[in-house]
Length: 210
Image 1 (tube, rainbow, N blue to C red):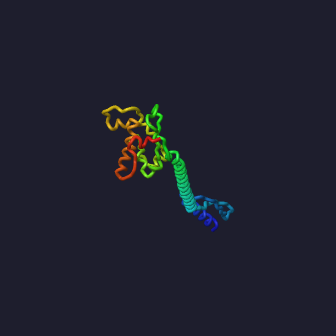
Image 2: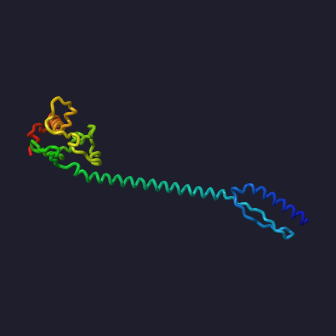
Image 3: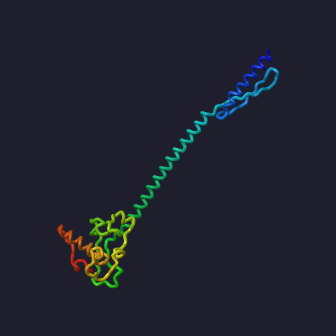
């Protein structure tokens, strides 16, 4: 009877090993020792499934990634806000240098000025858009924000010709002369506001008073 029981245990062990041995990829095996009636020790694998533990580890890892992404986005937003504040602060500091209250309209492109230097009250003209006078190299008006962040070039950088302009020039070519460009800008605007009932000089003595 003991021999029959021993044989049955051997057969059951073999079947157990064959069945669970084929699923060893996702499982972790331990060993359990069974003693037969004849004191012979037999070893059978005990299978421990790790699927649940692996899934929990994956969930924890994903939560960590999501938290890190949120913290990274928050840090990026904070850096952007700081940079924007720095740009605004620099722009505010540059207002006084870019937009002085009084401008003496003398230019180094002239060897000698034939008339008195125009003293331009910039603050008095602050109600008008910057683009009324200031423009880029293509003639497009400049905004206050563009001037504060990029600065502006002197008129003489483009309107750099001096002396009396020759007759027969086109309107565009006339503007290459410094005097022509400034007179067109200032006198043209003054004539327009005079029609609105405002006081604005249009003669030589009205501007060259210094």
